[in-house]
Image (cartoon, rainbow, N blue to C red; front, side, top):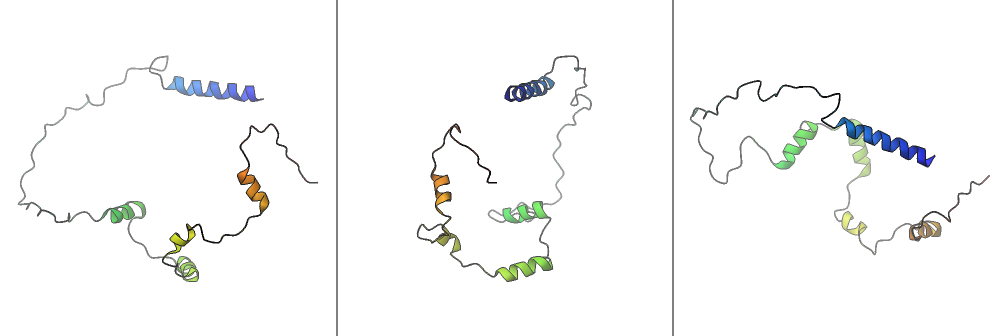
Length: 136
Protein backbone atom coordinates (compact mmCIF):
# COMPACT_ATOMS: atom_id res chain seq x y z
CA UNK A 1 0.00 0.00 0.00
CA UNK A 2 2.84 2.35 0.85
CA UNK A 3 4.59 1.68 -2.48
CA UNK A 4 1.39 2.40 -4.40
CA UNK A 5 0.80 5.70 -2.62
CA UNK A 6 4.45 6.69 -3.15
CA UNK A 7 4.17 5.85 -6.85
CA UNK A 8 0.98 7.88 -7.19
CA UNK A 9 2.55 10.82 -5.36
CA UNK A 10 5.68 10.73 -7.53
CA UNK A 11 3.70 10.51 -10.77
CA UNK A 12 1.43 13.40 -9.73
CA UNK A 13 4.45 15.52 -8.76
CA UNK A 14 6.22 14.78 -12.03
CA UNK A 15 3.06 15.63 -14.01
CA UNK A 16 2.74 18.96 -12.22
CA UNK A 17 6.43 19.66 -12.78
CA UNK A 18 6.14 18.78 -16.47
CA UNK A 19 3.26 21.25 -16.81
CA UNK A 20 5.65 24.04 -15.81
CA UNK A 21 8.00 23.33 -18.73
CA UNK A 22 8.20 25.50 -21.79
CA UNK A 23 8.70 22.65 -24.28
CA UNK A 24 6.26 20.05 -25.46
CA UNK A 25 3.06 19.86 -27.45
CA UNK A 26 1.26 22.54 -25.43
CA UNK A 27 3.56 25.40 -26.43
CA UNK A 28 2.37 28.08 -28.81
CA UNK A 29 3.49 31.47 -29.96
CA UNK A 30 2.22 34.18 -27.68
CA UNK A 31 2.43 37.92 -28.33
CA UNK A 32 4.74 39.97 -26.19
CA UNK A 33 2.41 42.01 -23.99
CA UNK A 34 5.00 44.78 -23.68
CA UNK A 35 5.42 45.06 -27.45
CA UNK A 36 1.69 45.52 -28.13
CA UNK A 37 1.55 49.18 -27.13
CA UNK A 38 4.22 51.82 -27.47
CA UNK A 39 5.45 53.17 -24.15
CA UNK A 40 4.78 56.87 -23.67
CA UNK A 41 7.77 58.97 -22.55
CA UNK A 42 7.88 60.14 -18.96
CA UNK A 43 6.73 63.73 -18.52
CA UNK A 44 7.27 66.03 -15.57
CA UNK A 45 3.83 67.00 -14.27
CA UNK A 46 2.88 70.67 -14.25
CA UNK A 47 3.27 72.67 -11.06
CA UNK A 48 -0.11 73.24 -9.40
CA UNK A 49 1.29 75.69 -6.85
CA UNK A 50 2.06 72.88 -4.44
CA UNK A 51 4.10 73.82 -1.43
CA UNK A 52 6.87 71.43 -0.42
CA UNK A 53 6.29 69.81 2.97
CA UNK A 54 8.09 71.22 5.96
CA UNK A 55 10.89 69.00 7.31
CA UNK A 56 9.74 66.65 10.08
CA UNK A 57 6.03 67.24 9.51
CA UNK A 58 3.84 64.14 9.16
CA UNK A 59 2.40 63.43 5.76
CA UNK A 60 -1.15 64.78 5.60
CA UNK A 61 -2.53 62.02 3.39
CA UNK A 62 -1.25 59.11 5.48
CA UNK A 63 -1.89 58.06 9.07
CA UNK A 64 0.19 55.88 11.31
CA UNK A 65 1.14 52.35 10.31
CA UNK A 66 -1.43 50.83 12.67
CA UNK A 67 -4.20 53.02 11.24
CA UNK A 68 -3.22 52.00 7.72
CA UNK A 69 -3.24 48.31 8.72
CA UNK A 70 -6.67 48.60 10.34
CA UNK A 71 -8.01 50.40 7.31
CA UNK A 72 -6.60 47.78 4.93
CA UNK A 73 -7.82 44.81 6.97
CA UNK A 74 -11.16 45.92 8.31
CA UNK A 75 -12.15 49.03 6.35
CA UNK A 76 -11.84 51.41 9.28
CA UNK A 77 -13.25 51.40 12.79
CA UNK A 78 -16.65 49.79 13.22
CA UNK A 79 -19.08 49.69 16.12
CA UNK A 80 -19.13 46.52 18.19
CA UNK A 81 -22.19 44.34 18.08
CA UNK A 82 -24.38 43.81 21.13
CA UNK A 83 -23.13 40.24 21.53
CA UNK A 84 -19.49 41.33 21.41
CA UNK A 85 -20.10 44.14 23.88
CA UNK A 86 -21.93 41.77 26.24
CA UNK A 87 -19.11 39.19 26.07
CA UNK A 88 -16.48 41.84 26.78
CA UNK A 89 -18.51 43.22 29.69
CA UNK A 90 -18.86 39.75 31.23
CA UNK A 91 -15.14 39.03 30.82
CA UNK A 92 -14.16 42.18 32.68
CA UNK A 93 -10.81 43.89 32.46
CA UNK A 94 -7.55 41.98 32.61
CA UNK A 95 -4.97 42.69 35.27
CA UNK A 96 -2.26 45.00 33.89
CA UNK A 97 0.58 42.52 34.52
CA UNK A 98 -1.20 39.32 33.47
CA UNK A 99 1.26 38.44 30.71
CA UNK A 100 4.20 38.75 33.07
CA UNK A 101 2.63 36.62 35.77
CA UNK A 102 1.58 33.87 33.34
CA UNK A 103 5.14 33.52 32.02
CA UNK A 104 6.64 33.49 35.53
CA UNK A 105 8.03 30.07 36.55
CA UNK A 106 6.66 30.57 40.05
CA UNK A 107 3.08 30.75 38.75
CA UNK A 108 0.97 27.84 39.96
CA UNK A 109 -0.56 25.77 37.17
CA UNK A 110 -3.08 22.95 37.08
CA UNK A 111 -1.51 19.52 37.43
CA UNK A 112 -2.34 17.44 34.37
CA UNK A 113 -1.42 14.17 36.03
CA UNK A 114 1.40 11.70 35.75
CA UNK A 115 0.21 10.23 32.45
CA UNK A 116 0.47 13.57 30.67
CA UNK A 117 3.91 14.18 32.20
CA UNK A 118 5.04 10.72 31.06
CA UNK A 119 3.78 11.31 27.52
CA UNK A 120 5.51 14.67 27.24
CA UNK A 121 8.76 13.39 28.77
CA UNK A 122 8.85 10.19 26.69
CA UNK A 123 11.83 9.85 24.36
CA UNK A 124 11.16 9.97 20.66
CA UNK A 125 11.20 6.55 19.07
CA UNK A 126 10.69 4.90 15.72
CA UNK A 127 7.31 3.41 16.70
CA UNK A 128 8.47 -0.22 16.62
CA UNK A 129 7.52 -0.88 20.25
CA UNK A 130 4.25 1.03 20.33
CA UNK A 131 0.84 -0.57 20.38
CA UNK A 132 -2.73 0.66 20.46
CA UNK A 133 -5.24 -0.88 22.86
CA UNK A 134 -8.92 -0.20 22.39
CA UNK A 135 -10.79 -0.91 25.63
CA UNK A 136 -13.84 -3.02 25.00
